[in-house]
Amino acid sequence: MKTSRVELAKIISSKIDKGINFSRLSKEIASYLLEERRVNELNSLIRDVIRYRASKGLSEIDVISAHEISKEIESEVKRYVKTIDENVKSIVINSRLNKSVIGGLKLEVNASRALDLSVRARFNNFKQLINQGKV
Picture 1 (cartoon, helix red, strand yellow):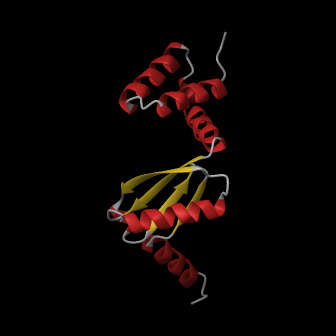
Picture 2 (picture 1 turned 90 degrees about the horizontal axis):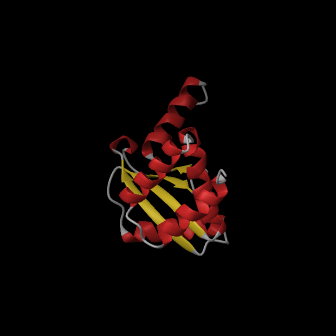
């Protein structure tokens, strides 16, 4: 009998909570999906895991910046997330560096919401205004 993606999301979330090594977990998921011929469900499964964890009060934030972020910025990000979702009990911040951001931050909240406060985004917005003749 085929295990539903929601049930798989619960199992994966449980393993994450128990502190399983992410490399090992990734291999287990890949093996299962290959064996069951469900590889095309990977993106949906990831979204289901994120959605399930969010329903339990865990919010995962990807912070993309050109430079390492400080503890002060992490605190600000956490405060911001709590203003957009009062059901959040715990916040995990995944920080990634991307030099193309130039400065500022990009936030991706639970893989469903994005806030682009980067210098690159402001520059692109300014270029659009020029091209539209509004500046």
